[in-house]
Amino acid sequence: FESEPHHAYRVLRAVKNRFGSTNEIGVFEMGERGLTEVSNPSGFFLAERPAGAAGSVVVASLEGTRPLLLELQALVTRASFGTPRRTVLGADYNRVCLLLAVLEKRAGVPLASQDVFVNVAGGGRVTEPAADLGIVLAAASSYLDRPLPADLVVLGEVGLTGEVRAVAGLELRLREAAALGFRTALVPRGSLADRAKPPLEARGVATVTDALDAVLG
Image (cartoon, rainbow, N blue to C red; front, top):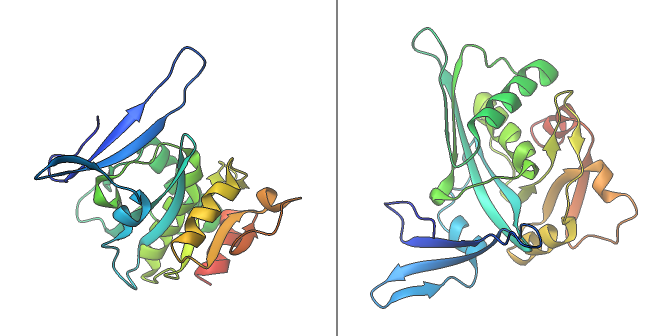
């Protein structure tokens, strides 16, 4: 079981080693009658998402075979003291630092003099590279103080040259997003090749710059 001290939910994570890792999860809520299953964990994690807030984005994660939508939040502010701070909750610290460097070098967003705070709302956790593009867009949105579209879901791995790479399980992720009312997805262009028509409008991007132009203009 995984849990945050101040949240009512518990995540049961199963890891099978004999025939390879599965990383399947179940989400439960602790109530008066003990643990009860959360049948719609994506809706559970997004229930308190603020409307029209800069620095907020929804990413489509995949835990084993279960798609899970999570809200990523970023706050970019001018550094008050010498060395800018990088504070990360719910994601890999080193990977976030890497993505911020890519955002500055490849897209020209000046973050060297900015404090950057990244959080997975609701105490969730993202561990896969498919959340890279969401982290980049959340940071850019906060820096520019421009909110991303409320009905947008984002997925894609970001490389050091600024390219947006394909991810596994695209159909599963998009179906989950469509079921929760999202109408647009920003996805790697390579993931759309030779695919059946997705359940929502999928816009393919090849680079970080393409992604910024598409949703932050």
